[in-house]
Image (cartoon, rainbow over all chains, first blue to last red; front, side, top):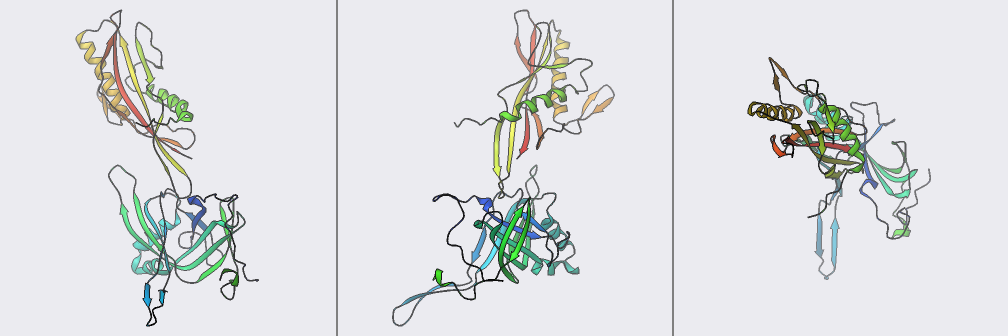
Length: 198
Length: 161
């Protein structure tokens, strides 16, 4: 497998075009209640009836220091990536929501372990790479899923909050999407930070 | 005030469904509720007020739209030569129509009737609620002394696309 060549531009048609929110998607391999496995994943697109969601990027430390010569330098650690799925309507067909419910129900029987590291997720950047057939993607095989709330106002829809934190083995690759089915293909990262980006 | 955006595509669907639903009212006793037409002598008819308007339009992170729309309408009951008792009876008939559309139980003789579910709509639309905005009242009296009793309602529905 040849090492991947970094893209040098997004894939929007014209200079000045902007990407829509749906151009960044999160996919869940439905291993618990569905038929997906780590070797043969079945990907579910996350976010139907979810009005707003961000992937937060948290650097454990972000410190600006000065050495004794007066030079300023910054130290970063992390980053940890977390997806905030807040005020998400409970929807028929969501394996992720079903798996979270089951994991809470059977917490002592292994459910907590599944919530801690059982999530297999893929991030797809539709705005980078070849649109539709080879979009840039990252797969994380040991993500945590933290259901934080279930409820809502009287007369309104039942909603839940779930926080997905990327963890475990990270693979970079590309994603193809056809008829709603996503296929992730692992690629090799460059052996070092590409000189073209330095 | 910003002008409300109309849901033009759904208007016919909602109108047809409401007319069909109104004509299932258990207290019709052989009457028909027509659309937008009343003879001078009397009858019952439904009239839309402003057409269907979009109350809320949200988009999920996948780009799917969920619209909540409202369709205000009123039902007119025109009748001639009402006695005081008959006036009460017409008002109750309309108020019961409102209750029934709100899925509240209504009493007909010794039986109770409840509307269990709103009719299915075409496409990805569904009724959410139908509620009264006013109780039934005398709206106007015509030149021939015919009385027009009215109840105002609003149907809310969801449209996903």
